[in-house]
Length: 422
Ligand code: AMP
Image 1 (cartoon, rainbow, N blue to C red):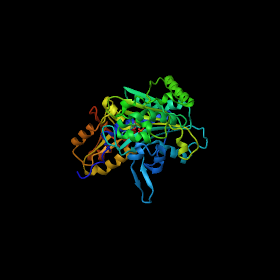
Image 2: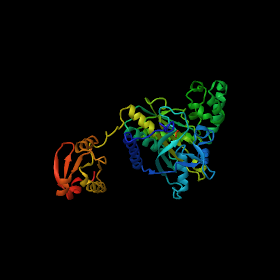
Image 3: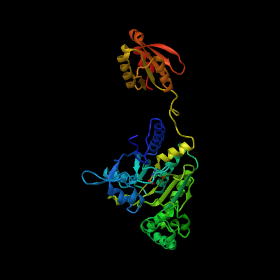
Image 4: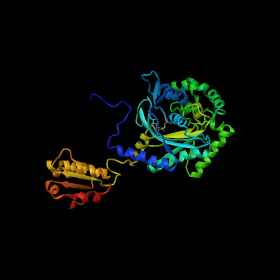
C-alpha cells in the first residue's frame, strides 16, 4: 500500500462508528441534562495560547505540540488540550454576558493532538469529552463536574473505577510547598530518572507522579498537609459534596496533573484492566487561567474524559456496541427494482421515502431479485418493496416483510402513509 494513516491515529469505519456514536451521544445527552451547552472551537489556535496556559515547562508544551507556521508567518498549534481554547472562546464571545458572577457551563467533544510515543490507549490524535464550568469557586461545582463524569462512566457500563483526588493549592501555598519538596528530594536527585532531574528544576510537582521514581518519593512532604486555610476548606467542601452525592473517592497526593494552570482541586479517574494507560479522565480547578488569558479574575473547573479509553474499557468489559447490535433489530425499506422500465420510478420512490423520513436504499448494481432480497435481509432492512414492470403497469408494489416473509400488494399512492418515518 502506498499510504497509511499517520502513526498513533485511528480510522473510524462504519463497523465501529455505531459504538463511537453511542458513547458520544450518551455524553451529549447527559451534559445537556446537567445544563452544559455545546462549544465547538477551531482545530488550531495561536501557539501562544497553549504555551502561556499549560506552561512552557510541561511535557505538552516542551515536546508534544503539533506546531506549524501558516502562510502568513503566524505560529499555529493543533488543539493540544481542551481547556485553554474553551477559556479563549469564553472570553472572545463574552459568554459571561458581562455578569462576572454568572456560571457558564460548556461541554465539547473534540480531537486532541499530542506528539507522544504511541502505545495501547495512547494516541497522537485522541478525542476528549470535555466539560468546563467557568465563574464559580463553589466546591459543589467541582463535585458537579466529577459527578457528571461518574454518572457517565456508570451509564457506559464501566465498573472497577476509582476516583483519586488531591489539592494542588494556590499561588499562596503551592510555592512554599515546592521549596520544601525540592529540599526533601535534593539528596535523591542523582538517583532520579532523567525526566525527574529536569522536572526538579522546571516543574517539581510532576516528580510526584513519575512511575519510574516512585520509590524515591517517600521523603516528599504532602501538599495536602501544607495547604493554606482557604485551599484546605475548599478541599473539605469538595469532599463533603462528593460524600453527599454518594461518590466514593480516595485522597492521592501524587495526583498533580502537571499543567501550570491547575489550582486547588485535581482529580483523576482510573480503571483496571485496560493496560498501562489506566487514566480514563481527569481534571481540576483553574482559578487563575481566565485572568492569564486576558480576562478578569474568574474561577473555573473542568475535566477531560479520554474517549478512546472509554471505548477500550467497554470492549474489555464486553459492553461495546458492535456492527448492527444495539440497534433496533430491523429498520427501513429496500427497493427491489426489476427491469429497465421501472428504474426511473424506483429512483423517484427512493427519493420520496427518504424525504418522508424513511431509511431507504436500492441496488445500484441491479442484481437479480433473489440477490437483492438476500442483501436486504442481511443488512437488517425491515421491509422490501418489489417493483417490476407488472406492478408499475397496475400502479401497485409488492410489500414484503423481511422478518416474516409475508408479502402483500399495496397501491403506489398509499405507500408513504403505510410506511411512515423510520
Ligand atoms: P489530559 O488532557 O492529559 O488531562 O487528559 C484527559 C484524559 O484524556 C486522560 O485521562 C486520558 O483518558 C485521555 N488522554 C490523554 N492523553 C491521551 C492520549 N495520548 N491518547 C489517548 N487518550 C489520552
